[in-house]
Length: 187
Ligand SMILES: C[S@@+](CC[C@H](N)C(=O)[O-])C[C@H]1O[C@@H](n2cnc3c(N)ncnc32)[C@H](O)[C@@H]1O
Image 1 (cartoon, protein in one colour):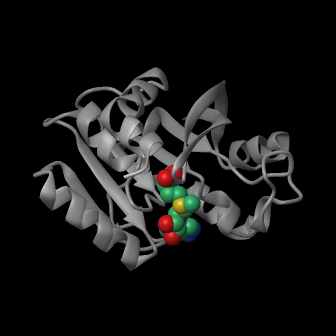
Image 2 (tube, rainbow, N blue to C red; image 1 turned 90 degrees about the horizontal axis):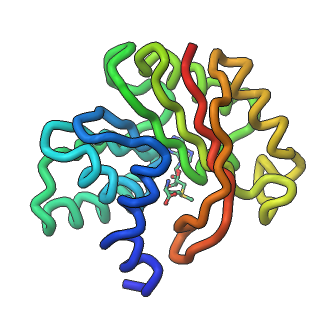
């Protein structure tokens, strides 16, 4: 395991998640979880009375994550292999994390994702987004031409209100970098 990943998984990830307002006992969806760099620290922060749903459309990354979960005897994470129609009850979640994911999708699909997340979140609860690869942050794929303000606008149009914008050092792939975290509340 690379040094940054090790440090993140052992300590910094939990500290970061608490700073962005994740709490013990919460039910959280990690949308586009990848190999679980956020899922594993989330499972520790929410604790044994909390729950983490880790969702990804890529079965390969979920298989890797499943192995880590088993090796570490983690009991409060459920994996979901899927995309848009999420098999969870409406207004059942306290938090949804969507980190380094939205650049994969065209605008219409991003809007569909926000609206599905709206359906699943309890009123007033937290939608935390880490937009990466937009116009001024290593532009790539579907966000390459889009600025941060436009990303906030498209999410707010689906029923969320931006409450905090944090500048944070956080793990991206295998390395630390600086980025903006958008904490929005569902109406
Ligand atoms: C760059 S990785 C980020 C992983 C993790 N969130 C992190 O920050 O370490 C993006 C992940 O999002 C997943 N993804 C992208 N679009 C998705 C969608 N519409 N539904 C589910 N997963 C998606 C990809 O398969 C990939 O595993």
